[in-house]
Image (tube, rainbow, N blue to C red):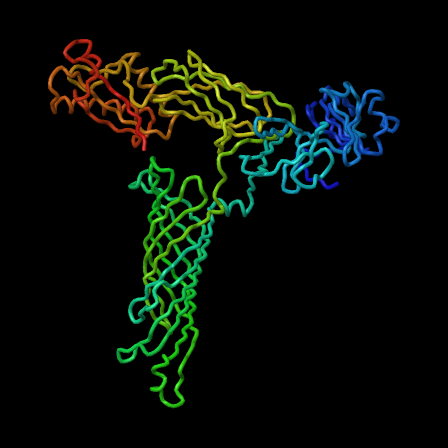
Length: 607
């Protein structure tokens, strides 16, 4: 029986019982060929005490009289006969408890925790076996066991195909070493990440120059495969990006023509072209928010070799004019250099691995047969390396000792230190869109969430109208952990409470209140290194806005900016602006209103 088992899951002999502490939900394969799904109670020296959940006996051991000594007599009853001849004994949840088994009786022990699987609303957990025949396999020692999905590598195994329902399958051993089983990480997987594609197009040619086309509508069929060069972002384009794609294009063109002599069309001609050209295309990806697609204008250059054939024959009405012995027809093959340049646009729906494009430009052919052709390309491309859609499940395996989950707890606050209730705390596996867990912060901003070992996580705190905050956390070790974390969520625009200045001056007033507000802002910026902010100064709008009030408010905003920079924040992340009294938030004719209008605001800048 061929088995593919991860190194972390395969142990043998006495080291099985002496090198590790008790484990739960493991499968033991005995030297008699019996599979035991057990929970460990204790182990001492070379003997372990286990509770047996299920036992799968070979056909030769189905009779109780043939049981080995470590299987208690009178405890295993009412077996289920398997198509393989095996007998399956299943407990609810245990067949028998406190059974002793020695290391000498064990052939292999599969020290995995559980493979978590789901189909529709059903969820189940099975001890993990390994990868074989293109599937993930788990031990399913229950009466309804199924070994579908191909030939099982052993009895009692259930297959789970690698398909678009899975986001990732990873195995983490007790030392923290992680192995990705799905998706693949080899050469082919890396090639697919470059988004290769195959294209089919229609290419009508319109020859110009010395060649005239009488029969319009030359047909062309092209095959293209290409790879994407890593994306480049250019600051002047902000949220738009440029993308280079290189590849090979092969086309076939055929068209008819007349050859002229003394102003008369005396000869029929047929030309076929087979360009084999390397091409490089520069795309400008536009992603309108209102449209679920990417629109990409592009410029394409191609250079290569053009294989061509020319067949000519004198028209019948001119045959009598030929000199004796002259050829009435001729054919030839040629190889020449080719060059093409074109402009076009490509449209790619977000949910389809197909794009549609249209371009037009010139193709030039030199050596032996010379001509220039204006060509349109209309076609479609299939992106067979496109990433899979939204994952529907997230299988996670942890191989090793039973672990206590990390308890991540803390509070969500605003930059002024006040608790923020109702924020959503969402946990995802790093690099995945699948939500592992989600909780809401309480009335005082408090939250608590448990994270299982085996993955790297992204924990995101968010609330409408606030800038989200993300924490990355690794759970690749097997230690018991408790961690406190404080999320700071800032409104898109808010006032720095207590920050004020001396009358008609940009000198900051000192005190615990203003210093606390400024240091909370510094703390928020350090916790979110990717954010940029604008510091806006506002004066009391007791009268008409004027240039002096704008200049004063600008100086005050700049004073706050310099203070924040002095605390270690990069100056490129901060801008300052003076609004004077142009944006009041209260009636400036009253003392209370003027005090509210006299403020410093922080605005989160988004691309």
